Length: 178
Ligand code: ADP
Image (cartoon, rainbow, N blue to C red):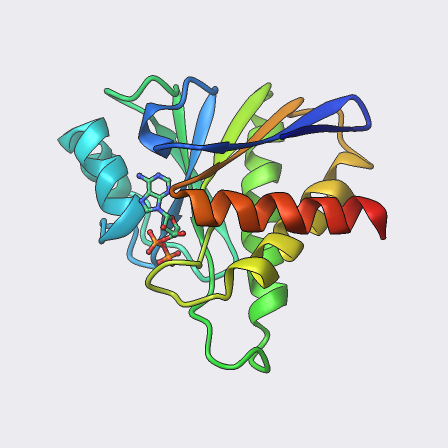
C-alpha cells in the first residue's frame, strides 16, 4: 500500500528492515545504543562490528530521542537509532514519547538531507506497544512532519509479518478516512 502526503510517498511493506535500500534505516534501539534483541540485534548483525564501535562513542540516547550513525555493511548509508518507550498502560506518556522518537528520527533524516527512510514498528516488539495504537502515532507524526518539511520524500514502514502489515494497512485507511 502506498499513499502520498505533500508530495512525499508513504509506503507499507512486509519485509526485513536490514535489507532496505533506503538512504537510512531506523533502528528500534534502547537507551544504551549498545545493541539488543529484535530489530536492533538484526541491524547490528547485518551492519557488522563497526556499528557497535560507533555507537559506543555516542553516550546512549534518552527515550523519545534519536541519534544517527553510518550504516557500514548495510545497503542503507545511515542508521538512525530511535528509542521508543516501554509500554505500561498508556498513561505514562507513551504516545508522546513514541511520537517524539519518530519526530527526532525524521529531524535527523531531514538534517542529513536524506530522500528515503525505512522505519520498523518502533516499540511494538519487546517494548509491548499495541500495534494499532503505535501505527496511529507513527502516521500522525509523519503527516505532521511532512506538513512543514519537504524531505524525506519516501517513508517506508517495513513490517515484519503479514499481521503487522495488515494492521498498518487498516489503520492507514482509517486515518485517511478520518
Ligand atoms: P522494541 O524493543 O522497540 O519493541 P523490537 O525489535 O522488539 O523493538 O520490535 C519492534 C518491531 O520490529 C516488532 O513489531 C518486531 O516484530 C519487528 N521486527 C523484528 N525484527 C525485524 C526486522 N528484521 N525487520 C523489521 N521489523 C522487525
